[in-house]
Image 1 (cartoon, rainbow, N blue to C red):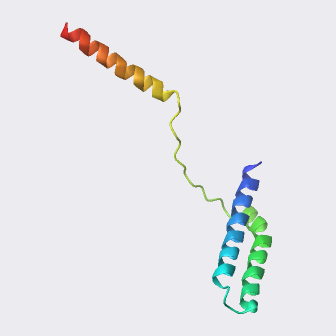
Image 2: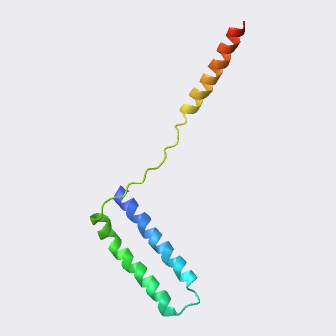
Image 3: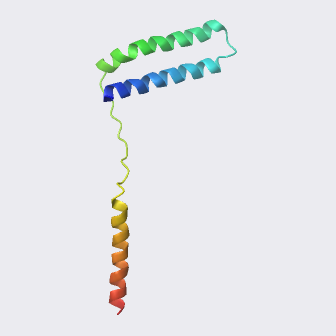
Length: 90
């Protein structure tokens, strides 16, 4: 899956979840109000691909987890420090 498709999938999912949540909140309102919310959501779904192509990208920095290889190196260093400390005592 390309980055564009993944981004589009995320945006469409967010719009649909917001529309469903709004419909649930407006459960006691008239049906016309709920239909306007759902219609606006579907209109936004139609516009999202075009806007995604035209609008500038927004980059979000995500933290990167440390690699699993870094952990054994830290353990080895700790063991090496203990060995040198014991050697200095003798």
